[in-house]
Image (cartoon, rainbow, N blue to C red; front, top):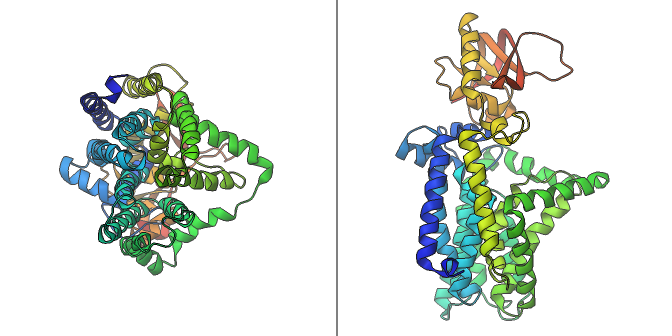
Length: 461
């Protein structure tokens, strides 16, 4: 237990974990979503149909530093965990009462698969988690500052950090709503002006995303906001079970229990503003995800926005966390070894790492060979992730994206000549020529290949 309470022990642990994540980031081929975001990074703008711009900006910086390769695409993910962990330690001293809670929180957060594995890859959740820790750091100063000017300045920093989180992923707004709820429910802060200094800072920093949406018929806001109207209570038990199972898996089981026990302690200490605001930030977004589960599936990574908060809450628990942390790190280690050497744990068609990252080199080679054999002028792909993977293959001919997402990104053309068209081959589709993405003889997925002219297409940038 002494090692978990030692700053030097934490520094050594962060060094080892960061090195491991960098190795994994360099070794593992890009997943289709990562390849998709990497295409964004070559066409920076204020927003995209699926998400705001921050993930593209981080990839742009990483590839500028290390080249357009898997390590460059993911570089800022593993590196961001180090300053994020320091910010979490400093935040705990003011929000929870002492710095020891911060050391516990950092160990808990880094031992989860959500952060341990998630920050070795590059998705919108990666910058989001960092900016949430920055918001917690600013919040810890905002609620403990004595002078009014400093209170306003730090609350402005809270709004700015949440704005950068919003520029990463829209779910950051849930934490803003939670902080507002904590302020309005507190007699100490309810009538103070300082918390509202967060609002203009937040609005200024989300302006690029808002302006992009305004210029594109609010497409991204409509796409993401449209999910709130789903309602399928007959499948609620299934979706709730998947939500619970996903968090037990990504937090790892023992750390999930520590989070739950810490939440009880935070609620018991709700008379203090620090634990009160942590309760709001932990529970309000979770309530939104539970509500969404009554209408549709909640992807396991969506609650990533709450994990830095849950780590601070878990640090308040009275249980020893050593074995919870050890078990979490062990699970991460097993996943990392499996990602590198591919242990025979699961069949390739059921292995999430192989299904996402395996076989793309051979698939792209087969696609290019077929395109050259047909003397095609371009390659068109209907699936956005597959299109991004083919784009990153280094093909000398244009790659056309047929998914509507590309209309917000690529260069439109009136027509094109002879095009190799790759469509997803569904089980009920008629037989025809196909190319399979495979792993050691196991077909992971097959795609139909046809050729012909296309009109009103979009060429990927």
